[in-house]
Length: 357
Image (tube, rainbow, N blue to C red; front, side, top):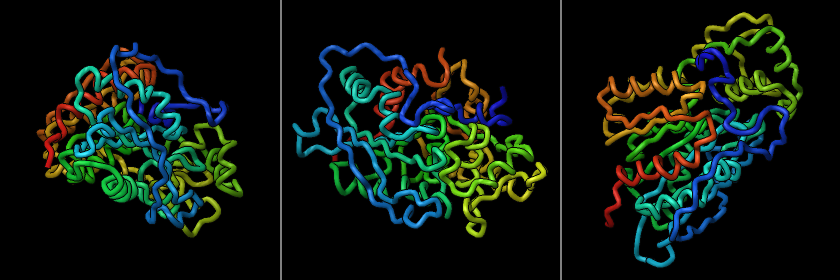
């Protein structure tokens, strides 16, 4: 299944199957507990956002996030820490994301196995359409600005962080992998290391093969909340349109679709979606992306996103960016906890600046 042609392959949900309860998440394999691992401390916070305030979907500007503080945080009050921001996938929020990556166990395990201690921040970007795609849009709110600016400022002023780009990392999975690539490329001067886990939507998405029937069903909705009843092949494009092709003059959804109600492609809207594809805009940010000491990428060999992840790795290499790339034995979600403990957090441990000011 080609990731660029089918939305199911481009997103693979990363969580709930369509029709399952909204609170469900994928059951992922759990690593063994590392003997002697010390406990982290988790805080659940709310971060106010002027960038998201006033969005046309009515998504709350009070954004929940989970902060994971390392074992030594309370024991060493004079110590400051790098921060890794971890972005979740489509149809889940931060609470479900920590279940998939088995936080706190995997953070504790990584530190016990020798990864230098860091703070981990997991913000939520779920909305009425199941995901805001970490973009700036009058319809969804400016989630890119929230993640890259407001959230960083809040964490740096409320926690003992090494408040500099060299000590800041960004990672995401699936839709969160898209968010990490989008923000990590466009805002590379804000981060010292970047890791993409099975990132969706790296290639231009085209029309997603939306038919006239699909377009009519989407545009017939009388409110955004009705999208909960849409099948995935319609709800996903509605979420993408909210992020990539907002239209404040077209209530109640405030979107433009890449096809009209007869199913004909709308080139001007397809162009907007293409402009949001990391593989389309990567070259524009080559000078700052080359500053990364390395970019990590991984994807399961049974994941429909192998091709797009490989293409992004090749594009980074073509710019002269050193990458750590692995196609591992797994599907879209089953090995996430192992990847986080044994690969992702150690990657940041190798590439972030841990020196104390």
